[in-house]
Image (tube, rainbow over all chains, first blue to last red; front, top):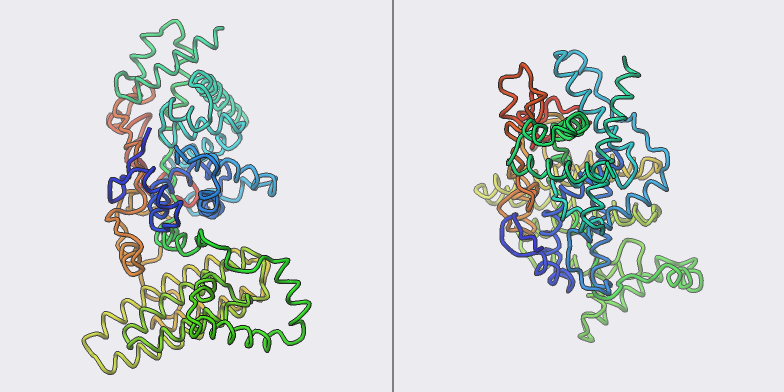
Length: 190
Length: 352
């Protein structure tokens, strides 16, 4: 499945990769723009911190650039490849900082002054986002790829190097677990 | 076995809803034997769909591509000495007279680059960092370039060099070489002083060019100030480096003609804004055009391949009493979140 550049031109990934491998930074810059948001969101829901997610996103692409010429196998699917780099980097990050504070990005105090409904909605979104970060890694990956980044079952399977059937099972369990977490939290709140 | 069957049913329902081939209610009717469990799972799915899209901050997006491209090392040869080798050289030969020795090395390198005709040293110095032996070569080459260009060319060159110096500082920070950061910041400050002098000279000589140049310099300095602020964030435990950066930020802000917090290009603090993910960033385009690194007419926020999901009217069961919610995706109030009501920390971007 070949992704075509939606940013400014129709150069397919494979062509940009070929140029990037021989040192074309602008070509790699185009790939960066193409996947920046997706990778950012993928990382964000793992680390739940905007600043860290931005830094890690940039690091993912720096690592990809360094790895490109060394890749023994030709990078056939850049998206899957860059997601895997992101996944590995997040794992390293989590190991290095095991106690990531999930409290650090709370709804600002001044929001309390806003309309009740809006605050409630914000808090609900925040609870959900926080619940996603509490899922097991495979469930988290599936939720973010499928429902946040809007990838299909097949695309998700390709990125995670799983069979589609496995992705369907993970998706089912992830939604179920998420439901449990939210229910548990609302009981605690109540 | 039950789960396995339900996983497939759930997947079919999700596919149908995502492709707008069925609504939640239709799915529940179609698979009424699993209604209760499906209902809960699809409701959770719809809640996720309602989370507004998180995006990098506008500040990050503004300079993301330029910054990345500037930070990419060359794919060719390794241009700086590997650390162990450098340490051996430093300990053995230039322990006490590092600066003096460096001058000699630089001179030799320059002779090699300019008179022997080989461009290898000059090329190899391209990615050298402050504190590296070849950095002097790089610096000398920059001075030669400046000497050979006119005033307006100088401004372009100086702005480019200043960007490079900041990237060098970033690289040094990444490598933990805080001792060498001073030199990098010093190089930036020196170029900044040259830039401001040149700008003044050009403005005095050519009133027509003044406005364009001033605007360009202001924009670039603003971007560089943002970069320095980001660098500060990365050296929170290095007070000395923080102070040096703060001092440099002040100098750059003075150079824009605006003190801290005054005027300049609009600052984005990550709060709710009307800028949706696909909106082109005017400043970014300018920035990219200046560096000649992008001709992409669109902003960096496009999410290709996936399209923008339109979940109109799919998730009816949770829209009770919300007359308009059916047009905005899953659940009440969905679909018009432009950053407000996100509940997502620092998310200053619109929903999907």
